[in-house]
Image (cartoon, rainbow, N blue to C red; front, side, top):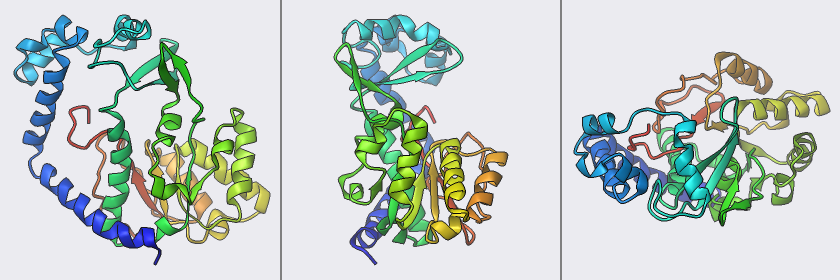
Length: 300
């Protein structure tokens, strides 16, 4: 047993205890977070525009803050992009997560110094909860791959901007970096086809035990490995045991990944609640869905 897997167990027990503590009081936990957010938010432009000062409970919030799309937030985002502070949250964002879709074109999602730990700790706590529940920590001693967007960041109004997965990559704990794949240089390649081939070059002869990434990227990674080697993933990476994703796969994608890995216990759980304390898995591939936010936050 390596030093990482050995030290992870007592830390996992501590995190599991903390999770049980807030989970046993869900209403109080969410109310505490709610009031903390309102208290800070009332000093922002958004808070003043929506009378946060008068918000005492969730019903007050619903009446004052209607559901809206990105277009409705654009005037506030525009002010942040102009370099103004205290617009949607105190001060200025630490990052902008840049994303695009079928609506609104390019979107800039503010990430604050207060929200970044939610992205990191949610993923960390999911893995630690799994370790505590199953007793399996040995995967931490093998190769760990995080398929992500480029960590190269640009600047908008003095704020570092890039893909969310690329931003989060800068915050991977130091103790995991020594066995993290791919290398930083490979991760910075913009062209996905070229990047994928380099990732395979770097990982094909490594004892990969944890693979993380959105399901379509992981499926492409598996497909290319099978095409290059003519083997199933279970034969290329015999100790591969944990698959992590911020987005859980559909039934079709789950079946597709299970077929490629030769493992049968990858089961989709829907796209709503994110369990940080998974039930004890059957023998085979253990799926962990990673929360982007704290489990006791209102946005879950």
